[in-house]
Amino acid sequence: MIRTLLMLAFWLLLVPFAALVGFPWTFLTGKVDVLYWLGTRIAFAGVRVAGVKINVVGLERLDSGATYIFMSNHVSNLDPPILVPLIPHRTSVLVKKELFRVPILGRAMRLASLVPVDRGNREAAIASLRAAADVLARGIPMTIFVEGTRSFDGRLLPFKKGPFYLAMESGVPVVPVTLVGTRRILPKRSFSICKGEATVVFHPPLDPRQFSDRDALLSAVHDSIESALPAEDRQDR
Image (cartoon, rainbow, N blue to C red):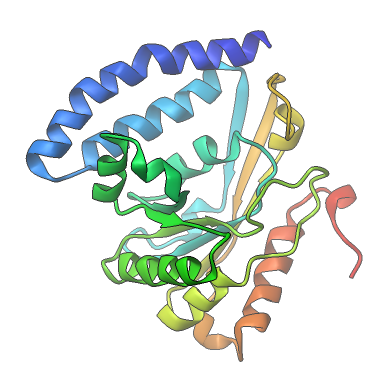
């Protein structure tokens, strides 16, 4: 619990500073880069302050000038503040639509090209995919936790189909990402962070044009992500 409180205290101390600097700059210039940089660095540093060591594998495989769709597994609330700051350049993510109603925050998220999503409404979900396609067309990467929720036991849950429609329609390369270790550091439905080591593995990009259909791409992404999981977290298929 002490580690969790340290992380939260760190965030509470620095987030107001980021807001005081980042929000005025964002609203005056219409550019969100400073606010994004401050927010992601504070989030990442807070995890480190909590005693989490982070190893990164495979980032050198990526073309720094390319646009990608990053598809990752999801096992802990620590996954976003660890993964998003590691993505080269600014990335868009899918965000619950309710957060866009929050004053100031909602406007900042729109300026950052984040995409609202309503998983309970099929038409709204389709609209979200179209919005994500527009973001990709502007050269902004997308980061998606393809299971849609966190896994309790570390094994991969069924993947959502939407991100693979997006990849096939846009033709944007997909980078499978495996997060290892965060489940043991902060499991689902736990509030207490344990000291530990997390590893983020960036796998080689997959070109959607090389796959016959959405399901073939989904299977390849699944296999890539699963290949870096511990043996006990892999499924026999």
